[in-house]
Length: 141
Image 1 (spheres, rainbow, N blue to C red):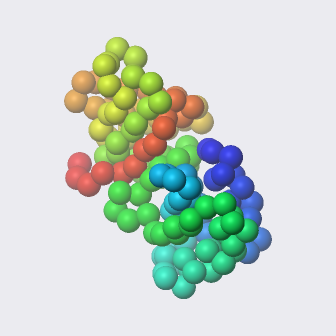
Image 2 (image 1 turned 135 degrees about the vertical axis):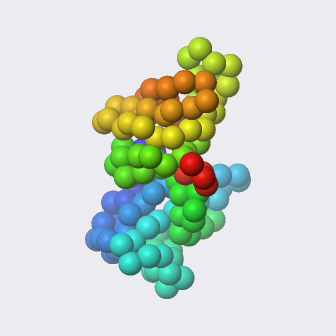
């Protein structure tokens, strides 16, 4: 988890304790994109409350707060565990061992505290969370 995501989670723990921060990432020239979830779903009103709770960050970043959508991001071991049996795309910081690429798409078949296991067309791959740059669900199985 990134430092910015940890900071946002700490800020929201008091203001919106039921909000789960799925992913917080800085994109482009100073835009902070935050994907959230809530047991009752994500509404515009919830996004507005989260934006208000993160007002201090708006001095540094342009802030985007949204629901995860169908291709929800996966950034924590619990996220991967919750979606075992679903298809995901995992992008790594460096090329995967034995492959000449940094991305793999396949079924999530395992998720420990240290790595996720993906059944991909080229075989079953174990990928350490520390090596993952970004990951999200993809449609279809």
